[in-house]
Image 1 (tube, rainbow, N blue to C red):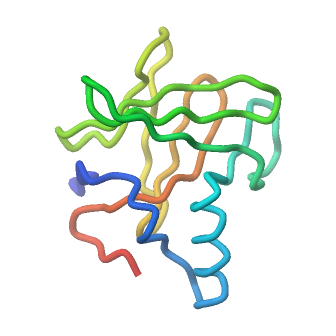
Image 2 (cartoon, helix red, strand yellow):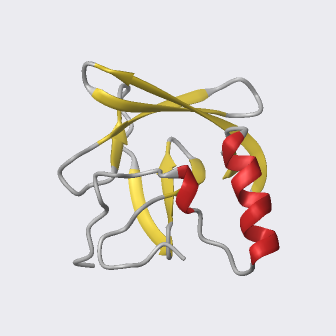
Image 3 (tube, rainbow, N blue to C red):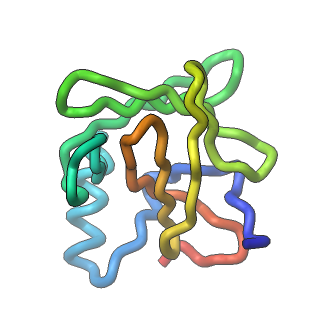
Length: 123
């Protein structure tokens, strides 16, 4: 896919939703740092993980916390890849799953994150 993920990744104010009620619910969850995830072994996604954003010398780092206390650190890139694993041996795999949303898989865990994707409008 030639579409690249914008460096302005994870704009919480631009969540995509099917209708305004879903949009308001998603916005409230994003404001609280809640995201949909499927930790390793989970059959389905559910809103069970949290997300912290930390700005530092390397740029914006996202820390995704699993319900079991595990976490992954993801570095937001400016080269079109979206995010990469900030540490550890496992690479993050980023897939565009819809307008304004990506799926990030790392270490058997999967996360749905809002994103600004070049060439797509964020409904």
